[in-house]
Image 1 (tube, helix red, strand yellow):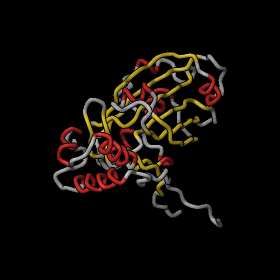
Image 2 (tube, one colour):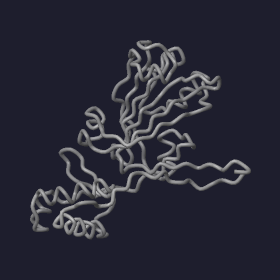
Image 3 (cartoon, one colour):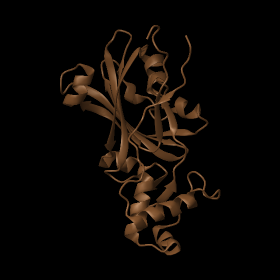
Image 4 (tube, helix red, strand yellow):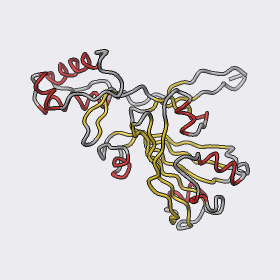
Length: 257
């Protein structure tokens, strides 16, 4: 079987549309500034006040141009910290099913995780339907904020069946991969995964974890993991900063197709 190179999954185009003429000109000026070798990935841009003065523009026009560049994934904003140059996107190969840390480190980047919440929780209707259990059945809810090279890029909520993973909340959930815990402590192997993908916006909890503005653009990846017996054992809702990843698929075509 021949390996097929990963194919990017197209996302919505963020080319400049309907910018006012002053904002369009300012966008090009900002692009020239971003192209300066002294302004590397992750570099902080001057304050908006400084950019207004140096570029001779108004706050409204500057914000219009900055927000367009943010939509294009060229820059990003962190609350109370300012604007930054976006680093290269992670290549997220859905079919590879790599744990977060392994995926990040395989691309010569640094990964770390902060535990936001870990508790028993009555399954809401959507989670219950995914896991094939009754609404209100206790599940483990684990919420984590994950960073790449020190930048928060992913807020993820996991919901696990308690009958499959008794006592899992006692483990170090910041440094251990759930996939590895499943295998090493519970003899559970993920044999099938289903995905749902959509563009969305950050809710307040995710935005706070990612130092972003609530309502900002995000990429949602929902995953349901099934064990070797075909039973749904957990489901994840990943909310990524929209400029942080490039979703890909790598698969060989069926013979004769």
